[in-house]
Structures are given as structure tokens and as C-alpha cells.
Length: 254
Image (cartoon, rainbow, N blue to C red):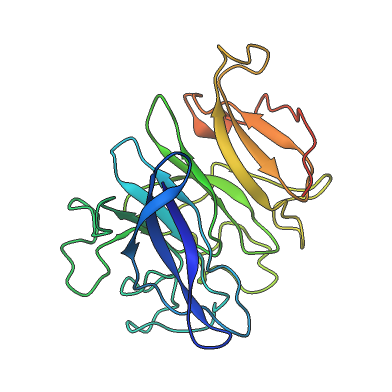
């Protein structure tokens, strides 16, 4: 079993670590830390430093790391932290499950100045993600925090824009975003660029039409603020058509 938690540090500080346990009669044993070099959490605003873990169809371990609530801070390259390839902040990392080292075919592994574990970058949130069971494509969500929340297909080496997006209140969802979502998630009667339109996607998974024939093969996204899980057709020939027959099918509020 793999988990991501915050290791102890000085008072009010700590840093995320990835830990592997071995199951022994429903008890985690043989604790081994496989990633222990992630940055210390902001002790004033300890947000967006947590993340999700998941095993890809390629057998590698993927994990998300948000921007640590430091959108204005610069990395060693002079770019914002989520744009700085020397930092794991604001990234999806792809690593070997045994020791946390970079996957050998990661997009920046041959760049000596970059963190070789980086798979994609330019993210605000430590979002949830999942894989299309047919195409093996990686799907994830992100936003500006107040606008433009969407679902994107995450490409190896892809840049998803944060924090170089348009200025606050981030009303133009296309400005300075090299890779756009294929659909947006909004509260009722609001547009993606409207202030406070985000729904706070909390989870996503693929649904099989064999198990849920009424829904068909769908990608279900749970929305914290919107209160619905909206399935979309992830197998549409054009991803932009994926929401053409969407249906809110159950309410979910945290």
C-alpha cells in the first residue's frame, strides 16, 4: 500500500512524503519512505501541498503536488514555481514504485537542470486523476481557484498554464494556457470565466456500461460545490463532444 502524508518537521512545518507499507493481516508493516525530498509546507498558508497517488497502466506511480499556495514565488529558473522544472511544486510526478526515482522515459529526464520525475506541469491544485481504460489516456482537473475549472487530458511534458494565466479575476479561460481542458465544470447558471464558478472537483473515475447500462461508458466527476457527479462520454471521437449528452445523476456534498 502506498500513501502520501506529511512528515514531522520544526514547529508548524513539515513536508510531504510518499510511504509504502506491506499488508500483513490488515496491518501495515515494513514501512519504507520512497520519496522524502519534497519541499517544506508553507507554515502560514499550508494549502495545495497535499496530493493524489495512482498507478498508471504503465506500472509507474503518479502523484500530484499543488502550488503550495505560492503563486507569486519564483523558482531557481526565475519562473513561477509551478512553471519551474527544477521544482516538483505544481507538477504531476511519475516515478518508480520501488524507490521513487524518475521513470526512465519521463519527458524531462535527460534535462540535467530539471527534476526528472516531472511528467507534466503548470498546476494550481493537487487534483485527483484517472486513466481511460480503453485509450490509456490520463485525465485530470484543475482551475485558477475561482474560475476556469476543467477536465483535461494530461500529456507527457504538457504545460497547463498556472500561474502564467490571465490576471485576476482570471476571467479569460484561454489566455496563456498552452493546453486547454476539453470541457469545463461550473456551478449552475455560471460560465467558466465567471468569478467563483468553480465546483471543486473532488474525485473522478470511469464507469463501465456493463455495470451501469443506463449511464454507459462514462467518466464521472464528483463536484463539491456543484453538488453533482456529471458523467461524460470519454470515448467520443472528438473530446469536445464528450459533454454533449452529460447527465447529473447524484448529489454529493462534502
